[in-house]
Length: 231
Image (cartoon, rainbow, N blue to C red):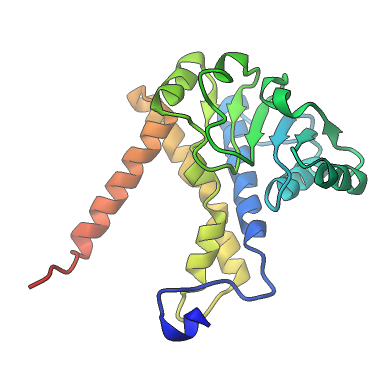
C-alpha cells in the first residue's frame, strides 16, 4: 500500500525471498576468502562454524553442507536448531557460547552484531571470519587486531549485500529479474578480491580497505552526478 503512494519504497516480488540472495552472497564471500587464504575456493572438507540459523544462516549452513564442508551450527533458539539438524542430519552442533572458539577454517557469524570484541578475539581459532551478521566488529580496534593476528576478515557490509542488491534490481525499468540479480550478487567475490588486494598492497586491515573503496566509489558518483542544491 505504501508503494502506491510513493516511488521511494520498493520490495521484491511476493514469490521471492530476500534471504535467498543474502545467503547466496555469503557463499560468494566464503569462496573468495578461501581462495585468498588457501589458494582454492573448494569447500569440500573445510570446517565452518555458523553462528545463528535464521532465514540467512540456515540457508548458508545448508549450502555449505551440500558443498561438502564440515559444518557446525548453533542458535539460541533450540527448537529452530533442532528442526534444521533433523532436516540436514550431516550438520554438527555445539554450545552457543563457544561457537567462535571452535577450531575451524571459517567462523561465520549470522546472528548478533559485535561478536568480534575484546573478549572473543583472543579465543578465535579460525583463519577466516566471513558471515552475514551486521556490525560484527565491536569497534575499529578489533578490526585492527584481527589483521594483526593474521585472521582474514571479510567486511560484513560486503558479504551480506546480496539482499540489498536484489532490492536494487527491482528498480530496473524492466522490473525485477532473478537471474540478473543473482549475477550481480555473484560479483561480491570480485569485490572482496579487490578489497583483499588493496589491504595487502597498502598494509591495512580489510575493513579499512573496504571503507576506502566505498568512499572512492561515492566520490566518483558525486562527481558524475552532482547532488542538487537548494536555491
